[in-house]
Image (cartoon, rainbow over all chains, first blue to last red):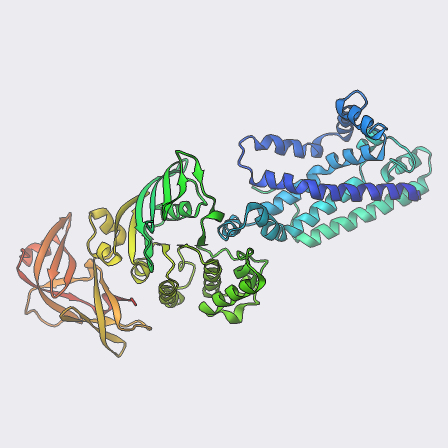
Amino acid sequence: MNWTAIGVTCKLATLTSLTLLIIGLPIAYWLTYSKWRWKFLIESIVALPLVLPPTVLGFYILIAIGPHSPIGRFYTDLVGHPLPFSFQGLLLASILYSLPFAVQPFATAFEQVDRKLIEASWTLGLSKLKTFFKLILPLSTAGLITGVVLSFAHTLGEFGVVLMVGGNIEGVTRTVSIEIYDEVQALNYATAAKTSALLLLVSYAVLLLVYAMNRRVWSVWPQK
Amino acid sequence: MATEIALNIRKIFVGHAVITAQLRLPLTPPSVTILFGPSGSGKTTILRCLAGLEQPEAGTILCNGQIWFDAATHVHVPPQARGLGYMAQDYALFPNYTVEGNIAYGLSGLSVQEKQARVSEALSLLQIKQLAQQKPTQLSGGQQQRVALARAIARRPQLLLLDEPLSALDAPTRTKLCEDLRMLLTRLAIPSVVVTHDWTEALALGDQMAVIDEGHVLQTGKPQEVFSQPINADVARVVGIETVVHGRIREIRDELATVQVGPVPVIAVASPGLESDVFVCIRAEDVTLELAGSSETSARNHLRGTVQTVTSLGALVQVTINCGFLLTALVTRSAHSELRLAINSDVRAAFKAGSVHLIPRR
C-alpha cells in the first residue's frame, strides 16, 4: 500500500471537514432561518455537487482558479505559485465538492430545534448569536457530527474532482482513489484490492458511527 | 409616565383571519389582565405582538410611554429589549439544561453571586428547590409550569406575558395551580397579561379583562362585570356564563357549601381548597323558574324574587330576577307566557347545588 497517498488523503479529508464545520454552520443557519423568498436559489447551488458529475465540477473549478481567471492571477501574485495542481487547490475543490454533505445535516439539525425554544431564549434577553451558541448548537450536536463525518468520508473517496483539479502528483495531490486507479492500470490487482478494502472498511465504520449517533433513517435533505 | 399598554394593531395572516385590535390596559400593580376568547380568536397573536415575536402589518404598540412598535416609522423593539417574562403554552423549557440552568439562562449579565441569589430566590418562590438538578423531561406538567414561571420571573421583568398558563395541565392540577398562580402574581406585583379561553381561570386570576373574538376586542372591564353584564349578544355568547356574583362561604358540611350572596344563602357543591371569598357562577340555562308556592323539587336552591328585565332571544327568553342579587335565567317562550313573567312580577328561581360553580378569589 502507498502510505504517502493515504497520508495525503487523510490530511485532505481532515482539513476539508474542519473547514466545512466552520463555513458550513453560518451557511446552514442562513438556509434554515432566512425568510428571503429566493432562498431556494442558494439551496440549489449548495446541493449542486450532489448531482453534478465530479468532472464537470472539477472542470469549472479548474477554469475558475486557473491562470486566466482573476482569482487565479490574484492567488499566483500573492503566493508565488498557481492554485491548480497544488494541495491548496485540491483542498478548495474538496470543500466545494463536499459542501452539501456538511451543510445539509447541519440545516436538518437546526430545523429540528423547536421554534418555541428559540423564541423563549429571545424573550429571556439573549441575542440571536447568543441563542445560537447557547441553545441551537448544543441541541444540534448529532447533526454536527453527522455533517463532519460525512464530509470526511466523502472526501476520502473523491476521484473526478481530484483528477481534474489536483492532477496526480505523488505526495501532493495523489489520493487513495487515484492510487487504486493507477494500480489497476498497472495490473497490480493485489495492491489495489488492499487499498480498496481499507477504503471500504473506513467508509463502513464512518457510516456506522453516523447511524448510531442518529438512530434514525438518515436523510440528506432537511425534512420540511 | 403612564403605566399602561396602548396597542392598536392590524395583523394579517394570508388566507386566514385579520386581527384588528385596539386595547388600552392600565398596568398599575398588582394588575392581571386577561385576554379572553375562544381558540382562534386572535388572543395569542395579540400576546405575541406584545412580546415582539410577531410583527403587525400596521399600527403601534406603546408600553409605559416607550414605543415598542410603530409600523409607520418602522420601529420594532426586539423581544430581547422589551424586558419581558414570556411563558409559552407548552412552557418551552430548554431540554439541554437542568431546572437551575433554565432559570439562570437569561441572567448572563449578572455576577456569579447575584445570579445564584436570583436562581435560589425564584426556586424558593415557586417551591421547586428540590427539582434544581433535574432535567425538564423528568418533570410533571405542573412542575414544568413552575419552572417556566421561575425562569420568566428570575429576570425581574417589567411585564409578564403568560399564554394559556394552565391549559397543558390535567383538571385537578389546574385548579390547584390556578390559585397558586393568583397568589404568586399578587405577591410579585409585576403587571401581567394572561391569555386564556377558560372563564373560571379568567375569574380566578384577572383584575381586568378583554374579551376577544374573531380578531376584535369586544369588551373590556373587570371580569365579574364583563361576565355578568356583557355589552352585546356576541360577548354573552363568548363568555358563556351569565350570573357571576361575589359570595362569602358561611359553612361547608357534607361537601356542600353554604355561601352568603348579599342577603341570601346559596347552596353549592364545595370543591376542595375553598376559603372564604368566592365568585358564585350560575349558567342561565341551569336556572328554572317556577311560580311561588309550588311543591318540593330536588333543587337545593329556591330563591324568591321579582322580574327585572325580559329579553327575547329567538326561541328562548332571558329573564333577570332580583332575588337579593341579580340572577339570569333562560326559559322557553312558552314557559315565559305560562308563568306570565312581566316586569316586577313575583317568581321563584330554582337551581341545583351542582349547577353553582364556586371560584376561589383571594
